[in-house]
Image 1 (tube, rainbow, N blue to C red):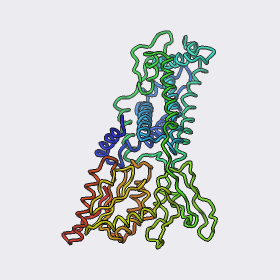
Image 2 (cartoon, one colour):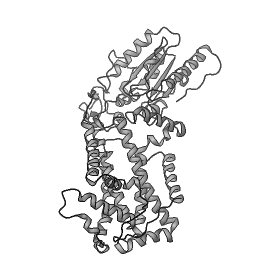
Image 3 (cartoon, rainbow, N blue to C red):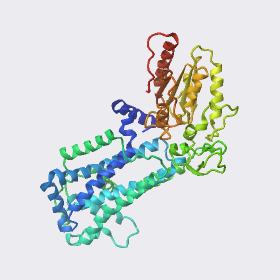
Image 4 (spheres, helix red, strand yellow):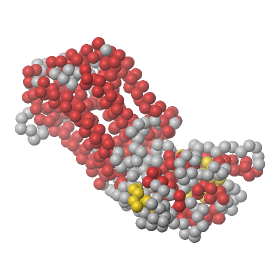
Length: 510
């Protein structure tokens, strides 16, 4: 699958659910929700489970037969949540890979996200064993034979399953440990995975979360999970209802060989670990703090998507008590911090605009100069300024005799005061564009920009700015038509306002 195809699928879901509630834009958060559902249902199931070899099967069967609307439902919900976790994890991994989110500052998150994949399957397979039915017997024996293919074990593991007497309560306690101990490691791994992300989404939007929970609950009611016959090591299980999502490794080892299965699994994990170190692109300069203009307001600290900014005592106490410091290893060079800085306002009466924190490759002062020159070069009666994003729909094709277009590293780099400044400097209207909600290359750029323009986040666009002269359009790469339509709406609106024709249409946020 290519990134372009993935985006088409995402946009199709956007048309159905809307971009903010598109489940494909909340895969990580939905994965966390699946984990919490597994934990909550698993606590009850463990409380009623008989952890002995003789009693495990009967306790699980009784759970479904004697309390079908509690124990049986939770058992089915538990299994379907495990399947959902695997699907969401695979889709999340695919999406991040397609977007190239394994390079640069995202290397840490990628590398810490690979081990949980193994932990998920280890825990899931261990959970199958606890049923101790024919499917559990098949999985336990197949896993033992798979590990026996490694030349590291002194004694074959498969001999533990030669007869029913060989499976003791002690061995079954190992099954319990695998299924309960591994998730604790998984929880720690997931916590570690999001350590370098600020405002990491561990809960999806309520409608999306309720949609997942409702789907799993409906599956649990319509197709409840049931046990196979009790395990009998004297016979070979036949006609099994295999959970292909959780137990795919067993048929793979049978179809090829255990050695080939190890080679495929090992190769896949080595590839995932190696990706961040292959073909690293040249890194853009990181954000730079100017102590003379940093007053320690903490806005850049609050808005940084990758926890790259910390606050330290200011060397000049007359300016502020604290000063921002950028960790070069964590900075994604997105410029969102510059858009948050109050000293980034273009209204400052200085020849050279130097801000408290800025991007050396695309400073705010240079943007002000470019905008002034661009507006001065337009000869139209109602000129329009367009601010866009390098990772969203391209704004350069919008350039026209009445349009000056400027692309930023991220729309979040744009201080809201630039909208007012452009209008005061002669622009009849301003179009602000960026990636679709949930699709920002730097996670929070679209969100912060929208909140700043709506007056919900500092620095905000002043209420005195005429909203009918502002248009906002969120569009991903390739959605040039969306931007063109937004520009035409703005043109029509400023024309009506200028000519006094009809009521002034309201500004829109597409």
